[in-house]
Image (cartoon, rainbow, N blue to C red):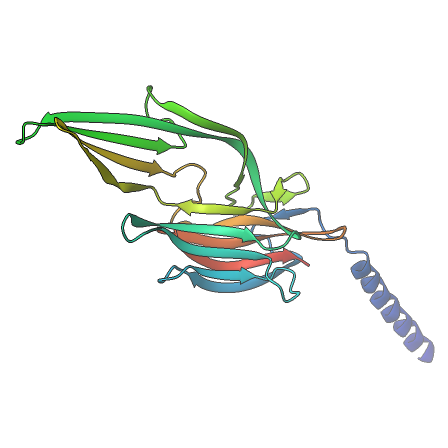
Length: 249
């Protein structure tokens, strides 16, 4: 009986040793699948960031060292006189943190439309609309400038992958920016009244509205690399809802 007990004890010790060795040889994967929580540390927030008189922001401490790594910001640009437009931003607060994205060509197009009429004052009333956009608006656009290498954030969904082949950058980026117009400038001449309207359309490579999506994250500490994501939604261009973050163990 004593021999049987010793054999069982030995087998138990060997089994525990084998399990421990299996845990010891765990190697962090170089690929993360969005939405897969295997070997991921998940934190649920359900936090809402929204502009209220002053810009609002929320800092994410992704490596739990007591310092913020990613800041999400809700703000409004403009003034009382010309009007406001809502904007949401993401800032990498440390060189350890970077976000996944891609490089693309950024082109500024301008299109001018005008109409005229004779007013009751006998003058020619001329309305000029100057429209600026990151995408073509007509066959008669003027190209004001081209930036051939602009970093834009990638919008990820469930089952997308991030790994060492993904492009990451430590950056400050606009996630969503509302299109807006400026109050008209009026120029009065002896025989003409001209009103100039300026419109800016910011609808290229912006974060989707009213959807749940992800931003890929890479955290580096020396030669150690961890991948993860932020799960969020953006509503009305500057209401940011953070649902969760997940980072590799």
